[in-house]
Image 1 (cartoon, rainbow, N blue to C red):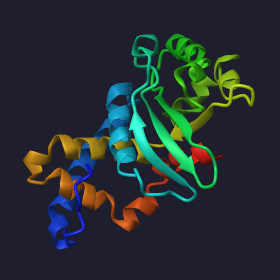
Image 2 (image 1 turned 180 degrees about the vertical axis):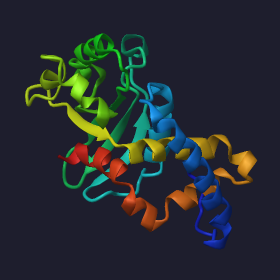
Image 3 (image 1 turned 90 degrees about the vertical axis):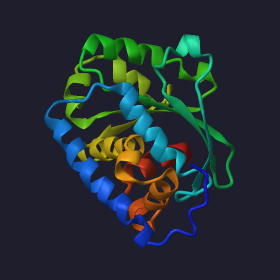
Image 4 (image 1 turned 120 degrees about the vertical axis):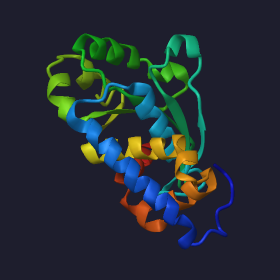
Length: 212
């Protein structure tokens, strides 16, 4: 996704706009119940965040995206990390963790394991969960409050329905690009349009947690 897209015109991107419209409606139909597919949500986020590399958002620039190590200890809980550079400040390693599970015992276990996120070389942790599930997670007396306490320093960003649909749509367009007769280059160019970049509040909020 580093291919130059400077030569593509707005007309070239019409097939991509059509693909996004089709996949948006498909993704919208999935909101009838909470989505527990952590890997799918994380993959969609990874695609969108990869487009911000070397493209500053406010005072923060994402320099690269890395895996979490050691992988055996992480066991896929923290999905990936952003290496960010806030303006005039040291580099920040920001861990991204999608936590969509409905089972509260599973959530409690995950939050307990996340308390030691700094052992993975992370400076901060950004936890994402559907906002309609927050009433459940707030019933846990020690889980989320401790993780987000000043001492631990985790950050929380709620996933709104609009955010989830966008994540799934981006992923589906990439996965079904041959069906829609579009290329990675065309999709990236479409997503990098200024209007879309400005409107993508979720991605901006994630990146800016590295500078807060």
